[in-house]
Amino acid sequence: VFVFLTSMDEFTGTFFVGIPFVTTLPMTLYSASGSNIQFASVIAILLLIPSILFMILIQKFLKAEHLGGIGG
Image 1 (cartoon, helix red, strand yellow):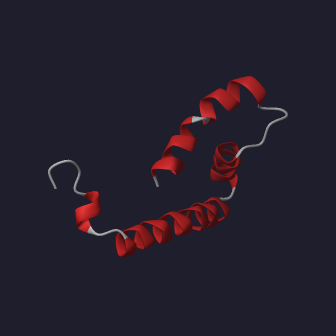
Image 2 (image 1 turned 30 degrees about the vertical axis):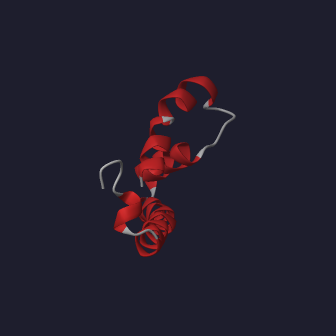
């Protein structure tokens, strides 16, 4: 989720530097959100699924004592 949000920040740089030639995921989502809301929604959900699965796997395999930090 955090990586996806960080990649959304690269929209500004891509928009000003290479808009006619470069098509990144944030540019695709931005262009789709104005014209086809269903397409943008499907892409957003498809991009969210791997993040959720990764968080579930991390929560399942890492125990609390490994995530506790220095004192934990």
